[in-house]
Length: 394
Image (cartoon, rainbow, N blue to C red; front, side):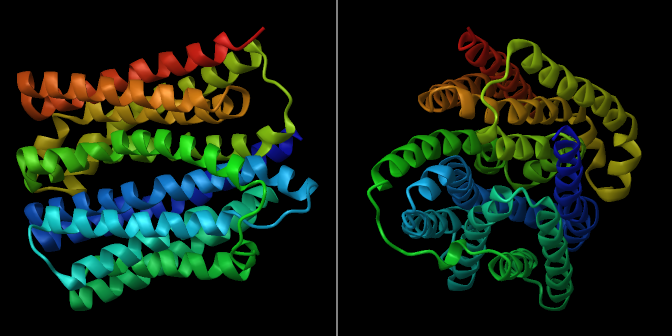
């Protein structure tokens, strides 16, 4: 069992690393060189909007389906989830229409259509990929992300021909979704409401609001910096975060594997919880020093036009990303063994702290202060999550 879990973690790390490495180290720098810092900043802001509109709901359906799947199988019931998927797609479309008009400051049918389609594809694939997690088939997840990478490369080629960066994501998500649909069954399930719907919808709603708040904290940095400081500041800030994103590739996928196996685990005692926490912290600390060591040469290569400004933020943003990755490992354990209402409590506390600390330090120190505020929020979040889980131990 332990060997299988470790192998699945390795496969999931590889699956997660492939598309992120391609995007962060090759595609984004090439786009930045072509678009310039202002247009690139707008693109990064719009990608954050895609993710905020689509990822939370898709992720919630994914996790709820994983945790509720045994109940549906035991009662021989099929339905509910595709109905909830349609509800999510409607909400997603509304958010993308309003958000695209706001950030682009104009009404463009092409931009709005791209935004709706890309975000919708992301939402659908985020849910449907749970079929591989249910069967603990991490080889298929790796293959799926290989198709995602191929799609990104095709989209990048088309982008260089006609200039629409959205095609990179559209081609990537579409290639991934085609693979998932061909190799899974969830999209073929009945579009009906069953007697289990009320409980599933309640859990989905609670988890959605908490996940949306968490995702808002994750993506709000770009969405808030854009109107406060403009697109150039978004470019500088985002470039400073790529080192943290790279080391997070080695930590965050662990949480996905944990949640897949947790339905079969009755409890995790304090000793094992501390082992998990210690291991992820050690990996994170080691990764932090590696990232700091390579940050200057890497940023000068990838983003030479604004690398100097980004380097002033790297120490802070890398620490923030790593602490966030450690939190992502703890969260599935809380979701499995604590009341689901804790998710809302943690999220409300996090977003309250986020607003207070980011605005406070932004007013004092500008963009660097904004980054410090996010770091303090993540540290507080880590301590609160550990306290919530340990308080439930007998």
